[in-house]
Picture 1 (cartoon, rainbow, N blue to C red):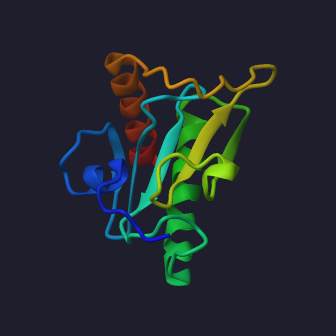
Picture 2: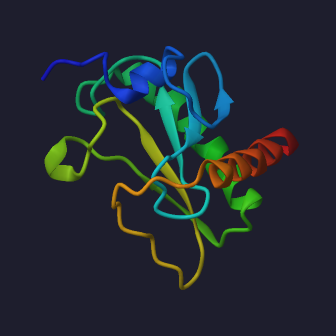
Length: 141
């Protein structure tokens, strides 16, 4: 399938939709997931267009994973997490719902399961608070 540049992440990259951004460089951005499955759930999105891992230019992966690592370390610190889950989905059968390559970074806490992906949006003030915590941890890194 062909890349659709009207997807929500492409619109965020172009500044057409708002996002609680926590990080941006020349290759990627990171922002809070509007429908988090846990505290601090962050998305890392490369700026290069591709539907997912299956059609991405391999040159995207090195810089993307460097940003994922940076966000994961900061998220673990910012939220005093016990660990971090990193997930990436490819195509609908695998759970992909936005067709622009992206990686989920989720701080994890012993004994606390992830919430199901219900489509329920988090309160903007909670997302803003989580984004600020993550930005502060990134500034310390």
